[in-house]
Length: 169
Image 1 (tube, rainbow, N blue to C red):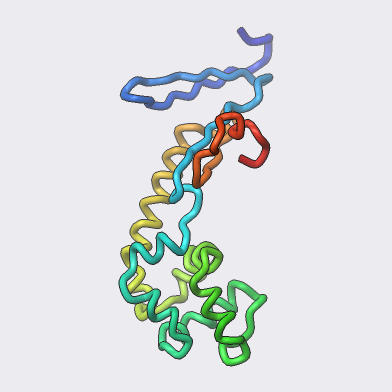
Image 2 (image 1 turned 60 degrees about the vertical axis):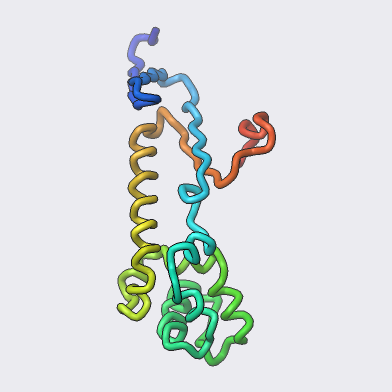
């Protein structure tokens, strides 16, 4: 029951083939929705290697044409790096094999806008996966919209159910 003047929002989501309706009131805290899925929580270097054949080998060779074309894009996105010839090779190789590289560089709009077919073609399957993950995440967020819901994504299930209630999970 609402107090006079309070709006009531109703949200429906399909759960197990049945329509589930949740009707929180304005005075209630948002309902927390935790989605446990490694891809939805953020794609990683492991996802990149699973979807590409030779690009990770090319990224492991600092003198490859792919790295020579890629590095100026890295520098444009992550200003903590210098030109390729000014960086230590082990620093470059470590970064190009990291999840930070995938999330900060490959998944950026700037990368997709500036990378040539030399980089994009071998990454086509990975970007198909990225697009599918983004569509699914958007569908989940649309099914559980703010402010009625607080949706978060995690890559692993907590070891104890009580951990679901700790801040930051």
